[in-house]
Length: 373
Ligand SMILES: *Cc1c(COP(=O)(O)O)cnc(C)c1O
Image (tube, rainbow, N blue to C red):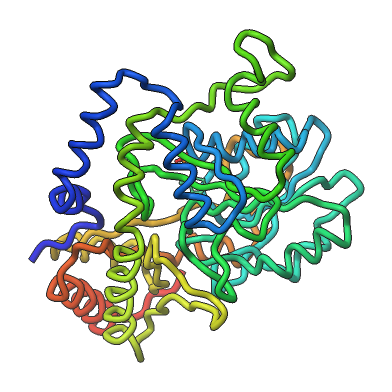
């Protein structure tokens, strides 16, 4: 049996006619950037994320960059983020000349360790970017409290977590700004790059809308220096169709996760821990396994795809050498980098496929001797 890590063609086949129709409409109109399809999608997104505003942008990375520009992050500022996340979280900070200040993760959830945030705050700290890693929300209410005590702003990197909830409230709805990615591998994926920023603050939303088009309120008159962060109409049209199915896809991922949870219980494999207050959308189903790289190799030989998110903490990336971090600074991040393995979880997988993947992993880990690093 073959169980690929992800197969987007299966999902496309189920909604092909509607997608083609939506794309056709944009083609016929030839109004290709922003416009009514983007506005329509933004409307649906505000309802889905329960925020006053949603602004479609060119990617999740640009959502982060644009949100940081909107709160005037400048050279000399410090912005706190976890050491264990996708590069864009910290890259967007550094691109503005500001300093990413890393914090280790909670080993159970892989999200930023809330108890270590305060010790990373200095007089130069301006903002915190917590990440909702793998589809589980960070402890946003505690992070907001810390931010409030120190006069900081919270930008939630919800790129992997659209539709996830905590205490019943969706990702993006409680941060000053929430950033979404519609990269094709996310739960809501466009047909190319796309993203959005959600927020409740009217002035912030207005500023982001300007920054999205080179800081211009009226065409060719620029109030500030922005960027090219526009969303393409075709992407918005595709996303509007897909948004209608999103909850049903989340549901299928949760069903798949429950099968893994059951089969992998009582083994040395650590299955995802979801806090009781959280509802994960399982953008990734990430386990910890001993001797990870060898397990990954054997899984591949037996037809099961898997991936390592992420093999190296951001504090140890070559491009961040200038920040002066060293090996050992964030032990939980470094341990996670050695142990994590993402398994196939996409909604269209059959129960047989998930069961096969889970049993294969189980047998590999149980048959072979533990080899510690
Ligand atoms: C995917 C992702 C991003 C960036 O999104 P793009 O649309 O690929 O630019 C940012 N942060 C996290 C945590 C992500 O997973």
